[in-house]
Image (cartoon, rainbow, N blue to C red; front, side):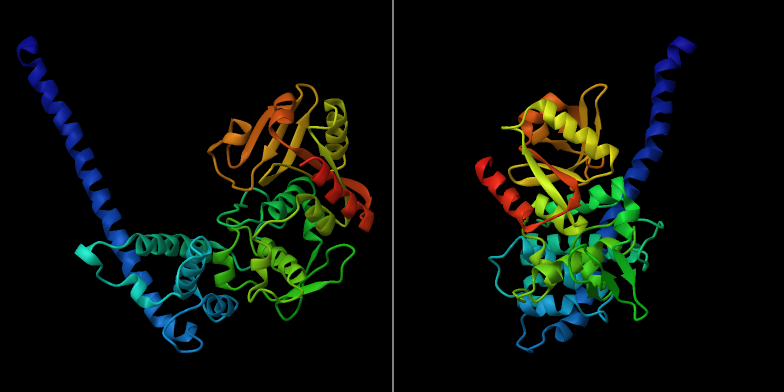
Length: 372
């Protein structure tokens, strides 16, 4: 009997096992569709309720200056902030677009499907809303700043994030000491060798529109804003942080944030023994060391002289394959042989144990011109 009905019984057993799985999969798919519809509706409601207030000149469209002005408004919160920020972030990578208007995301698109722009905006809205609601309204959510939550996102501020992350990893107390909370809720950032810079607490829109700190508190937004205020002294940007996110010098950021000198050691013109010596000294003294490819800045977490390997953190914070290093990252971190590093990275930028001078800035620029 066992042999006669074994196959039949096995088939029944398989069907019994597969059925609940198929039902769950169908339910999960229906839930995903339902959540997607909810996000579309939620985004639409937030857009319609806030648009007239964001349209400062009441002409029916949002230009970039209006968006950037509203980004700084602390009264715009939650879903409204996520919707406005989604528009800003989307336009950051689509600069050819005309000023935004509600008809750009019509309730019913042609043939009933959402346009790609509409889908992208809804996706951004959902993600940014989670960021806003998940960020604790305190300076440090875990007593001191941490590197593990930083993710660059769609911004060109890798040079600053690498520097700040290097400090957060090697000497978080030194980084935390830069920021002083004020009674009125503002924060004063004391970059060494520079006048103190006071900034208001970050708005929901600013938290959503710029670097992701993964629920580590306001500290990264505060530093980013203060650096933006300094860089935008001539007021070329409606929102100061926009002056930060379009590239900069990893060595210059080290000198500005730490107040100490920074020396560039190009891999093409420096003996590997000198690179080893610089890494050992810097790691022992909790100094920031940045590195990079021609277009991207990263920070050095460790050098192990026993096996001659270097551990690097990428501000992307992802766990993907990083092609320039031929390495798979884990939350942005990867380790490689120093000999391979010398072939794939252009330099190391090493913080020194002395105050930065104007000559240090000049030498840094000259070194980059000589050894691009």
